[in-house]
Length: 94
Length: 294
Image (cartoon, rainbow over all chains, first blue to last red; front, side):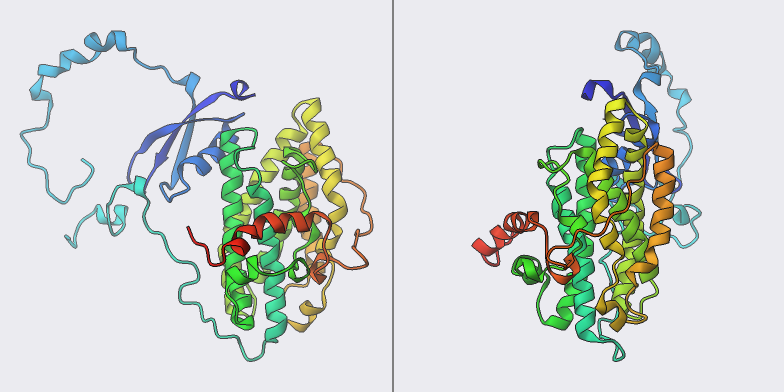
């Protein structure tokens, strides 16, 4: 039974103004039921105001094998970071 | 905290991490519990027991699915619904207790079967026991939540401020319960040949208990402006169910006379055979260890 339901990845937005954040995955027969299951599994403690569900199969992910060519080259490019700006203390989530 | 911050309005009044949940509120804060002088207090207590017992017994039945639902996600969904109903039951039994001078636990755990006033639909075994299966449970939940939602939407205008507040709070919960049941009814009804057969069988099993939901009761007439006459709900319930049946390819079973027990309904405190077993399980802990807490 379980194996016949596809896997869905769940993204929840905690508050207006924040991003949707990946919170986990679940099984559901279709997208509408996935949304409802996500509501029950991931927002029952007041965690969210908006949910996205995406079929796990539809996500193309980078492979651990590609880690070095993908991510290492940016490691020594300090000039890409906005470290030369001062950030106001009252700007959260930056 | 800066008073001229463009981000503040986006974040509300505090910015603790969302995953721990924020903004919980106690139910019914600030609602006047004084019983209005125009209201028949004894009838109000009985009416609150009726609606509270419906929720309590239905909650107990749904909780039986814990660890037995077809999928873990559904296990959580049914438990959530059961807990919503338990919350409604607590508020309503407490309201009855305001009149009767008892607390919610005494009313839930120390009343005998004849003191319970829930409709038979809430108490019958619709699975996971031998009396049904997941389809039967969905059929009952669909009917029960459609009926209770119609009732609560009218109860918001009750002359008893507590009943009105309970209805206002419960409405959103019941809207979700109805949606959950309808989503499943459509999927099972329009799914495979086997799922359709079992969904229809479930509907046939619960249907004889539906007409009892619309029986008028003496206390309703003693509570004009406070209670909702059950007969008023029928056309709305019929309309909603018809829409679900049509989307799900299900056949509305033929109406049959209400199967009363010795001529009496659940509202009169007379119950079907399964009620005694249900209460034994629900009450035994409290009766064996009076005042037990977690």
